[in-house]
Image (cartoon, rainbow, N blue to C red):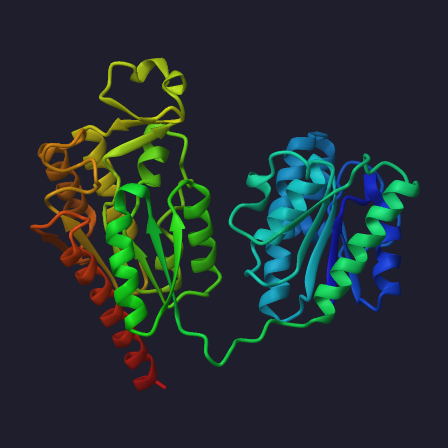
Amino acid sequence: MPVFLIATLDTKGAEAAFLRDELGNAGVDVRVVDAGCLGAPVGRADVAREQVFAAAGASLATLQQKNDRGLAVDAAARGAEALISKFYKNGDVDGVIGLGGGAGTTIATAAMRALPIGVPKLMISTLASGQVSHFVGGSDIFMLNAVVDISGLNRVSRAVLARAAQAMAGMSRAGALRANANDRPLVAASMFGVTTPCVERARAVLEEGGFEVLVFHATGAGGRTLESLAAGGMLAGVLDITTTELADELVGGFLSAGPTRLTAAGARGIPQVVSAGALDMVNFHGMESVPQRFRGRQLYQHNMNVTLMRTTSDECRALGREIGAKTAAARGPVEILFPERGISDYDREGRHFNDPAARTALLEGMRETAGAVPVRALNLHINDPEFAETAARTLIAMIQNQKLQQHSSQ
């Protein structure tokens, strides 16, 4: 199978040709994808730019006429993602390597993020020594610092590109990752400090039931990674205890996982148990980072670097409606479990964020939009062992029932 090399041949043609030759010398079957638009391409492409933009539903001629680099990069990223996804589904991708600055990195990593974890992905980027979380997302992309600008070949760029080729050759020659015969089915769980007792107890029950549990801290990156794993089909189930990232997305906190949080498992038909963990809070950094419009709200300084803001009843109702709607759209089994006595360590009697009215609004919002999805309210706190055990056992039963149904239909 080939390795796809994504580059803008109008600006990085010579460098892409050098990298292609180095990969070829290492025994790699290479296919070059030209994601350039505005200038004339330099060198040969196996996947022409017309194919890339057509995959994005865009016209190369129209984009060239508009002469808008931002529009071109956005369309190229969508097209590269669509093409690489299609090639992978057809069993025709051994890995993806890209090179570039801001535009090239945006385009190539969009395609890489569409691939499952374990498929080799290597991005040679002038931005790799800085903040790259928005390029990597929840994927396993190797970011290699270009050291110098990718603008002509010299002793530094040749060394970096040659080593990148060798690294990709090593990964691609290793072949697809093989499952271990002792591997247990994977379950992903979402956790925050204020829901740790719940997730730890649930994890123990799941492990006793024969599952391997991946726990993700709900800090934005954790939620995005969970979604990525679910989208890649790696999971047998999701225990989404801690959906707090939805509150940051709605209200404007610092730990959002984006608007697609709580959608991937449903789209793949993966069994889910969903709860409301830490939806009582929106996250900011130090007190000085709280926007002025929120200064009159109920705030709690967790520590000098973390400030929490209590969500209101109206916000909780909106969050409940969002959870209900997203679970109602799921293609697989799903159930919502709601802890009536509190949704975080801070949301209980005598604690900073205890607010029964807000909890009621949250539960009502879920029921308004959940449709046929069961919404089970338990007279428990989220960190009570009984709540954790109920959540874990509910998920185990869902997974087992789905497996039985699949076997019976074969």
